[in-house]
Image (cartoon, rainbow, N blue to C red; front, side):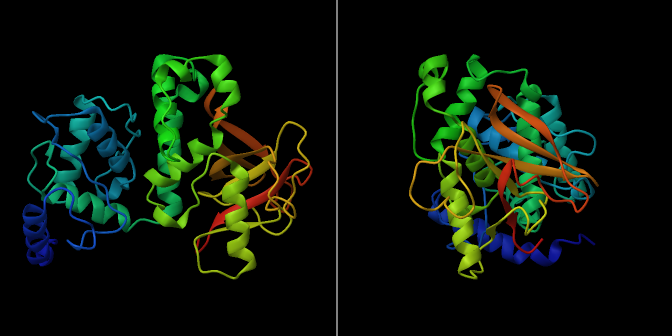
Length: 314
């Protein structure tokens, strides 16, 4: 018996809701899993395969654990290009979930619904790590640069997360890039695509989301992202480590005082006994991983970093 047949009635109701209300139906209207992703047109074998939709499906599939039909050996490169690897990943997910193996995902259909359900059931830190690692893969761990056409096009997507619309031509100019650091919008984009929703304070400045996370901590809020002094908490996967840059005198105590502190944050994707691996944007004009030494207690060096942001509930 299909283990998901118990949901057939609910899925049918959701599909009917979507058909009646159209693509713009809200998640709450149709009882979609939250957070949820949507596509405008079909993706996969003989699909319409717009770049934006293919990218969405690639990012989604990467967040699915291998045991549930996600990529088993290597993450999909989220390049927005349909190919045999992406189609095979769609089929593998459908097969594992006992859905019709068509290699195609439609805007309204069981495969997309099930993808959203599986992803929303995964811990947020795990999803953040997968999205960040796939971005590192897209950027070839620093070998693709921000002024390359593909790099600039990707940075344009990052900026859109905070409501900024720069052209690819602008973003290919070194002088423009120097005036518009994009490391914080990279973090914001990863958090958004991982499904952080309203839990994260999206911003073009690391100090802004750090101050928001600090406020969550001080107020005893039940919100997800919380910031601590580096001597208070060890870094955790899916969280962020934050430091000053350019001679900034920023600290945990003054990060929220309204000054334009220069800061930088990286997303932690792995913790070993004495080191953390973190992925950051605008690092040497690209996205790459950095190895960060930890002390014997697993803590950061307080002379370099001033804040640790964790995803609460880990």
